[in-house]
Image 1: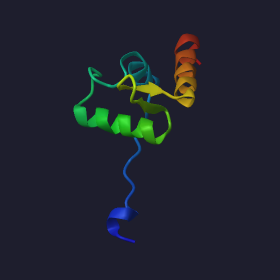
Image 2: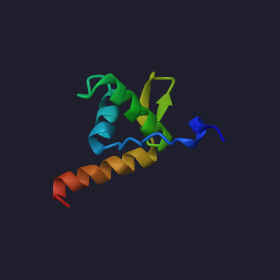
Image 3: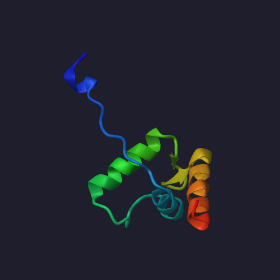
Length: 81
């Protein structure tokens, strides 16, 4: 096993705020973090099955799992739980 394959890159935490932004805009353009961080967040969301690319409309969309995570986040915000 090579040293490169043996290393794991840190996994970005995809927050509800990130998912909400993607739901509204189809990407993270305008999200208030550096470009490199936006790329890492998009990569993590793809790897975790939270978003998919919709070629016909030319943007990312939340998967069923992504919608579920976003609703859980919104519920936490609304209830404080």
